[in-house]
Length: 350
Image 1 (cartoon, one colour):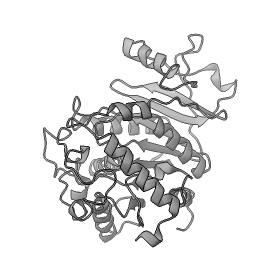
Image 2: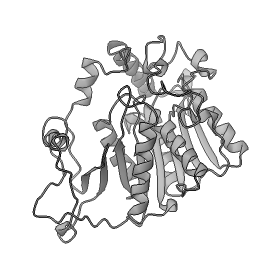
Image 3: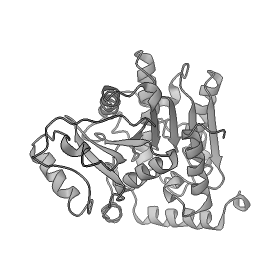
Image 4: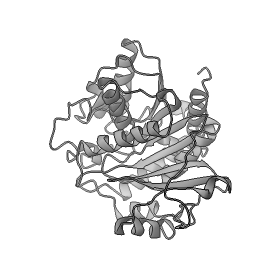
């Protein structure tokens, strides 16, 4: 295995292992002080793009798109005037975001004219074990998705998380956001559902729900290190227990917490999509690292989907760890993974 991994890839894996041992996840899945500091870095939207905050009733969304022209900005978005929203605006303009493009101009009309992007839209569902909120790394990922896709818009939602909001809160928010996309004028064939870790599992659960309720399915699905088996019974949970640099060597990680499904069974396919049926699913690109405890989560779903006649491209990256793609272009394996995502989004042969 080692001779298949780049030098930079091995260094990245070691750094991830050190970081996770220094900042373990607490019993309730909360972030450590060190991880808080890592996630609190400022984020600035690229000048040619615009990040638009959208307040739903129970959660927040962010739309990344091409910067609006002066003409387009004569109408914008209605913000709900709540204390919570004002607090989030202050945070966007301060420490957690740095300079941003969130608009809150009272001179603008309350109706927002959003013209669907003819190239389509990516619906991003963030990871974090159903415990962690969205952070700046997913704004980086949104920019990356837009770049490799050749200019698709990207909608990322900050869905409700456990322990305050167990299942089905996250799925309800994902469904509401997906319906919002359809209401903007997009067809299912214009939408790509993409997610990593818990977000990958949530994306699959969303598509299972859409299929089961005769709602429009997306054009395709992308998963990165998807968490699909909350029973933690796949073979890689034991096989890779001692080599996984993120979750390995301990049963105190978020993988083994049960607060997300405490009111239901972890074998519910909308909680653990590994137990679902994949008849009628759209094409899928599924990426996973060879060293992950969650390796079998991807392999099992891919095999079930292929058996159901679904077109599945599954790529197991040698020596790689959980959501290694966040390295962007820092090491060859991550760069290769994003190149693959780009080809998949552009409809090129993999």
